[in-house]
Length: 108
Length: 125
Image 1 (tube, rainbow over the protein chains, first blue to last red):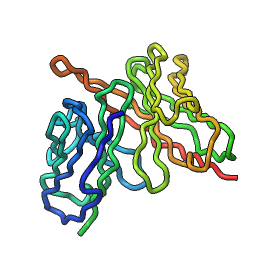
Image 2 (cartoon, chains in turn blue, orange):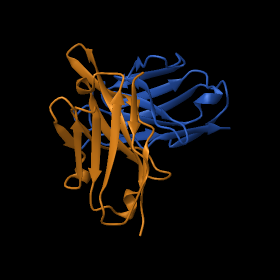
Image 3 (spheres, rainbow over the protein chains, first blue to last red):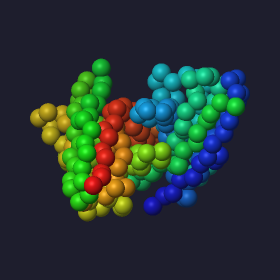
């Protein structure tokens, strides 16, 4: 099975900072990569699919890039509501999907 | 509006089974897949499996093979996930999520765009 890793596992940042989270797949997954945001006590929410397509309603400060094995999620200017945990997910193998371990973004 | 309404929390003893339901509304149930994802306390997301309400096809994560069964009832637009032989480490919040697709060139991208609020399953003697 394809394994996903994320770095860092956690980070501290301030409002207004530019934040970048990296996700790596154990083998090539083309652009079959999604990003989700989860706040404590809530279900995850889709941010980006197909590596770089912003889900409807998601603020434009979120962006995704990458293909193959290396991907990034960027928050251009961190807002108070962005403090959360972020997960990548590969959907390369239809019906066998896996998540990364998550990156927690908290307040510096 | 599009939503997935999950059944209420469950408390089970080790060795028992649990069946969690997920009722869809606001969209054509058979036109989208359903994935199940769980999250143990303080842990990350774990994808459990996927099924197609259209034809009943399923794919389960290797870890759950033989212990999980995912089904749908098209008459009520409801998906079910049954997990058997429960252990304490099955204690988690179980989510259902709608699987959507987007075409891009020769590719068909799959993503989970609508989530239920989660069902807490506690396994304890």
